[in-house]
Length: 370
Image (tube, rainbow, N blue to C red):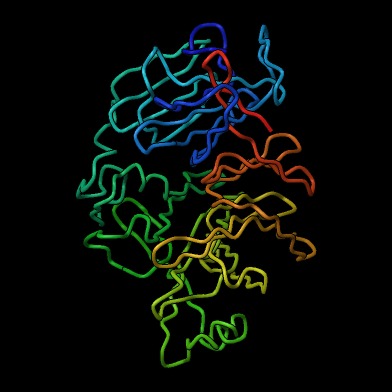
């Protein structure tokens, strides 16, 4: 096992700072929150303590690797002998993998890591004020601007510059100032100008139709506020797919569903499903034949995980998968669907679900096991 990532190979890197345990003991509670594809393998980041990060790889074995687990996976807990700071963003471009924290940046290229100060540290500071630095000068923010960047969508245009859209929801709107439209929706940005397209809200009749049990809980027409917003989203071609999200408690609620925003017509298409109506979306992954959604019930105190839903885009059929953890991110590698969750990684292959567990091996390194 590799204790530090050096010039030989980057196999599976799991950053678990100062984790103690016996040989081959499982490590639970690893929150995996981001994934990317790099050199034909799936890389993920997460955390076990909210101070240091986890970086991992699942994929084909690298030349010279002796590890055969999961097609070539291995684990380490440090870079250059130091615990890895909490990673906020992971990205891959060409032969370079980049991990960015609030004050540090780790770059993997040509078999080795280089750690430097984050040259864009200002994007990771709270209460940055104006969004002008990321091209949204008409709104001021309290959340770091790297989060705002994650809500900017660039829609390609044949023969012209791409169109820019900002997905406006509570992840970036909380405590923001000077927002022209506080309602959830999508801004189209052209230079310093903008146009806002408000997300349609469910009517009470629709709520009554799809969530009759919630009506029985006392959510009557005169005692309920219906508020939904755009949750996780993904650009496909020139359109934006998303799952709906809402707070469900204290007289506030909504109706779960799948949404689509068409930049050409500037219109929303919302699909409501019985199997989804009680749930918000926690993650989304769009494929040509299917849309996958992680499900969560957002209530006061704690969120309730609802597993994974597959919506067949052609037939409209629904399949549910039992995942006993909150799904944060979904990616595909080969014929496997990988879920980054609040309890490590789950893998869906056909109708089979497996849980990948982090373990400490006898040599003190880390590995992943079914």
